Image (cartoon, rainbow, N blue to C red; front, side, top):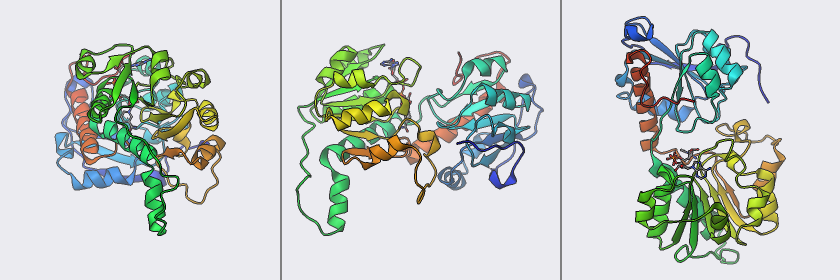
Length: 371
Ligand code: NAD
């Protein structure tokens, strides 16, 4: 579902924040004038955070943030007309059409307030001369710790126990869990987050096996055993996904992969929804191959996540099916959502604008995403 915004709708402008920025001549932007940054997919928790932490804006005092509620896509790109920079999040869509509109309306810089960049058409950004900057690492701890929270909730059924005791039901039926200690935990993608998740699992006394295109010595030294993807699928009691979404990793958990899994495996996804084929996941759960899953991200989430849909009948039947299963826990992409992470995201975003405006022409920037 998309909404057509052909012109600027003040209704969606949620507020502005802290103008001032000293520009240098190297970027061709005017000196000592405010730089307009239009922030798409803006939510109240972020605006409240910035309001309560005014020191962050002082990093680049001439930046003027304009908060918009809608997601960036081809239809909403014109809302940023005249803004030098546009700031987007995980479920915005900076596809070729959106980038073309942004660039034609004067936007030169795309600021991602996240690490992943699968939502950006980098080829189009290059073609239209739009510099893309991201926040490569804001708190891998936040995400790794949340993956553990999902895992323990599914395995020990704390969410069910909580609801029961609120109804004065103190029975234990249906609350049987299992120890992580002694189990085999498969970590798919042993980068920043995967490595921390592995460390926590080793602390639990699990055997940790890993799969990565680029195995790391740090992981090996920690005690992670690298195996092939098929071996990881076959041996793991728990599988946690921590690799990025690329065309090559899209649906890496599909029906064929599920057929290779150990019966009863717990699947945790805090990476990107499209790593898992939703249809295959339902098939695996129905057949009992997947014993439970914790999904902070889910294929198709961009139509739902970060907004309140209370009272609506959802159109996504697959998500409805997953919500109805007793061994599925879905959270709305909150693994990143800690005070430390939000602070680091906005600090790095302000630093990225500063770096962009102060750069020497053509010099690569530290957080720049290139093709
Ligand atoms: P990272 O780049 O440090 O690590 C990713 C690892 O995946 C790397 O070691 C890489 O070699 C590996 N990899 C790449 N392609 C692979 C493949 N085909 N098979 C196996 N491994 C492969 O990234 P990170 O900081 O650890 O973040 C991982 C992912 O977590 C991000 O890409 C992002 O999608 C997701 N994330 C989610 C949230 C959230 O709130 N849920 C927050 C931050 C990041």
